[in-house]
Length: 317
Image 1: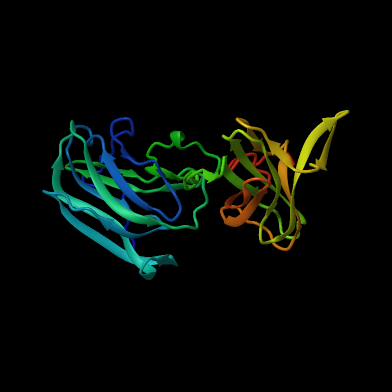
Image 2: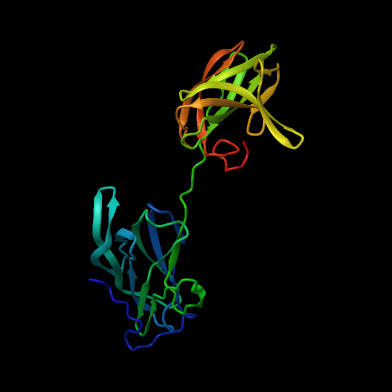
């Protein structure tokens, strides 16, 4: 059974949109998240108190549960969904499609909230807008906040726009920074790799090394399980042309010096790959030094073309 939203109720008096409106407090949600829909009723109808509020749950919001309100009677309408949704407890093919609070009295000069919880389908694309129609009834008259803009139409042009919220991308938490590794007089920080496409034969690796001792040390090589070799390479500009070459004898880290291997400069070059590191993974490997010996490290994997660990794409080798 579907809820029918009437535009005219009671005595048939419908006030102008400028005098009353319903809005959603929370204007954003992410695919797959739980959305707390808080419908705010801002005014009555031409001075008359609000006595009934009905909220339609649109397709794509499932498992809806309304919140009771003291002094109001809560009723729900159930119906079949257009598709079956996957939940934490199995699947859902039907559920609450509308919630109605009635029997109370919200004066014209007061504001109140009517709340429901629902799961947001993970099929929504970021940038989509979800419209939640609301019917507001008063002792005389009412409003049907159910207008949905057509493609390309500005919602502000509508006289009785349905409350809406926008689908946004899930925020990505910054990766936790690994603790520095101590190896003799060396401090090793932030070893990372760039992800590679399938079939790639080389991968770049990067790290920051500080020598706190009184004698120099030399980085001579590196290993990861999916590469047959790992050497140190330099990158430089000659005559407007970027050139890359192996560092003969390894890279020296002088006493008191910090050397950072990074895109566009010194870097680790892993060759003859037998696998492809994927963004978000971690890879166990080693760094080899003349004095400190072989040091186990864990490389984090940033996206293809990243300029820093977990950083944005940048067209730079």
